[in-house]
Image (tube, rainbow, N blue to C red):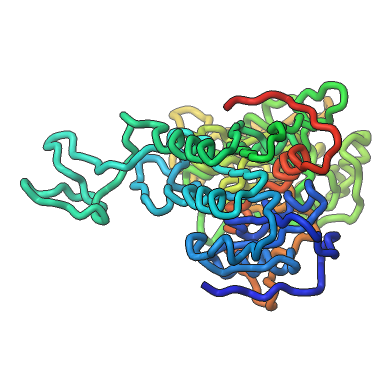
Amino acid sequence: MTRLPPQLDWRTQFALDYQGEINVDLFAGGGGASTGLEMGLNRPVHVAINHDADAISMHQANHPGAEHYLSDVYEVDPVAACRGRPVGHFHASPDCTHHSQARGGQPRKRAIRSLSWVVHKWAGLVRPRVITLENVEQILQWSPLVAKRCKATGRVIKIDGSVAAPGERVPVQEQFLVPDRSRRGHNWGHFVEGLRRLGYRVEWRTLRACDYGAPTTRERLFMIARCDGQPIVWPKPTHHRRPKRGQKSWRSAAECIDWTIPTRSIFDRPKPLAANTLRRIAKGIDRFVLSSGDPFIVPIANYGGTGDAVHAIDEPLRTITAWPRGGSYAVATAYMAQMNGGFNESPGRDLREPLSTVSARGSQQQLVTALVECRLAPETQAGALRVAAFLISYYGKGGPRDLREPMDTLTTRDRLALVTVLIRGVPHVIVDIGLRMLKPRELYRAQGFPDSYIIDHGHDGRRFTVTAQTRMCGNSVSPLPMAAIAAANDHQVATLQTVGGAA
């Protein structure tokens, strides 16, 4: 265990140490939960623990007043870390990957699924007044693990996929472990009952980050436990798809996008895009551009590197499309492609909607743009034909084919119909399609982090790769629902409004 000394120079608004209760972030990561706690409590996080050196360094860069422990959570002594100070708010976000349905039929690890038990250790030794836990909703099905068995022979399947020989005893570390369906939810019930035996009232609820001001639909289960006799309070949603009085509209994915970054054409790439990727793009173009009736218009006129005028989306059409090129006018439309397969079959979503859940790889959401012109310029005719050939290869007669193959109809204009889209009643021709990954800063915005949050380097100047930045974002807690929960259950708040809950 390595204990890192706290910095004395604050970088946040919480510059003065709070002389009273301390706040603890057990699985601190890059600092999403800590940021939410500080926003909601208006007081700092004092103790932060994480085993990942880069994550704890990012946390220290943004929360330098906390005492940081680079350690496995079980190795930190709660009594020693708290030094006799009472704990006001204690938060835990155990690794969710081995509970998540996204893992499918892959083997589970007991050590990772058991991380939540460390909450009992802190509850028993330092008795935090308020405990919160965040995880995927599937943690409610938390059960013991058993060896997967071959359907034909009934013998144990090993971690490498092979089947045990007759009479062979397979050590547990070599078994392909899966949840015991016959005892679904057993461990979760045992976990909750343990907190109640320690004197805590316990409730839980699934919340969406977009309902609390974050431009992402990320949905997570939050548990709240209190031992101070005060009621558990669930914060009222501040945002909604169809807001009622006192609420705001959901924030959009478009707010997160840096529109000065151009997309790259899907055509003529040195490494062709995968067939499934192209198929999703074709499906998304059809749904969000051709068939939507109201395609999202990119809010700047220099998209793609031409011109420098910036216009509002709701201005008149000719103002938005004032992009002179060969006597024509052009504009870009866009949508957010959903690039993960499996149980998620959606081709994407409108950019006026919140972003879907950010993953540790950051590859599930990709920005697709369609460049359209209202009067086709000679130099863009070939591009328009290429787009038409691309979409025909997916929707044309004979059904889909390998979209990475050469498009032999490219120059045979009489065999193609140019792909047009109506934008406020004016027909435009699609002349190119672009695609790019979202940048880390865009992903952090979607998660609800402020732009001032340091994501590219650590407290000691170490530089984080794009991969590391994205991983820490996908693993983070959205700060805004965390802030809402913290504020609602702050004992210093004079008025408490109980919304109700499910124990």
